[in-house]
Image (cartoon, rainbow, N blue to C red; front, side, top):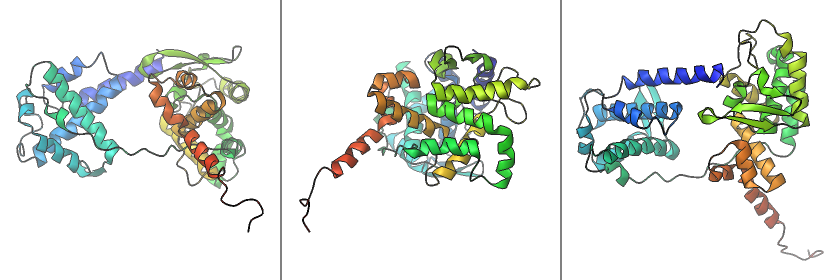
Amino acid sequence: MSDYFKQRKADVMARLNEIKLELPEFCDEFFVGIAQQTSELTRLNYAYDLRIFFYYLSHFSRRFKGRSELDYDVADLEKITIVDLENYIEWLSSYEYNGKLYTNEANGKARKLSTIRSFFKYFFNRGAIVANTAAKISMPKLHEKEIIRLEGDEVENILNVTESGDGLTKQSLHFHEKTRLRDIAIVTLLLGTGIRVSECVGLNLDDIDFNNHAFTVTRKGGSRTILYFGKEVEEALGAYVYDERRNITDAVDKDALFLSLQKKRICVRSVEILVKKYAQIIAPLKKISPHKLRSTFGTNLYRETRDIYMVASVLGHRDVNTTKKHYAAISEDHRKQAANLIKLKKDGDE
């Protein structure tokens, strides 16, 4: 594992340990017990969700209102009723925490309820509680989100805009002169390989093998995988690496492939901003992010191969059902074709 991913893992663990101090002490057993089956980031998200849950109990539940969030033990889980949990899910629609307003639609509620279910299930399976009340709560009905991606000429257009800077503000053009090769390489890599933005920013110089048109990425969970790139990605990466990156000898992060203007490893947020900047010019009605470029790649690859297992392998999905989301647009293609198959009037009829 590279130093970047080691540091990221350490940062997540440090944050998790901070949040755990805001939770009842018995929660520590839960996090230790699930450590082998979950990632650090998953456990951190569980901690955030549990913090909100105990905050709700202590401030808005009739049964527990007035109690400190730290003053709970595992026996209290048996005192929590179905009504308590249903009221909690409803409260999540809109609430204030630490002076900030939060809202949750069905997807957000479902994730937080999933955390509570895992929490109750853990202690029920350990015999610490006799009833798993959370398992009796129905998950909120989820609505399929529209899969947003670049279509048709939009892929070529965003690459052209990234290269030319056409449509950028005067201030953005000033920075574009300094980051053009880097930005072209990043956008082309995301569109041409479908890697995650976290995988992109984690790349090191020695992860790229131009001789074999390959590169190594660190996937979720820390596994290392070799992927391959085509001619267009090779040209964009080569121009950046050989014409610019290898000439930067005083980089703060000497191993990092993509650098910020401060010569540090570029961060996820910076990549999100640069993708949005170029995408708004060519597709102003779409909210395009690095993940949407990944969806674009997944859909295009499926259209070309019709091999869902190949797409799942390249995208690094453990469950092929996850991959289906990336080619959902195929169904729309079929619906569009169907609309033109039925003729209501014969040719020549008025």
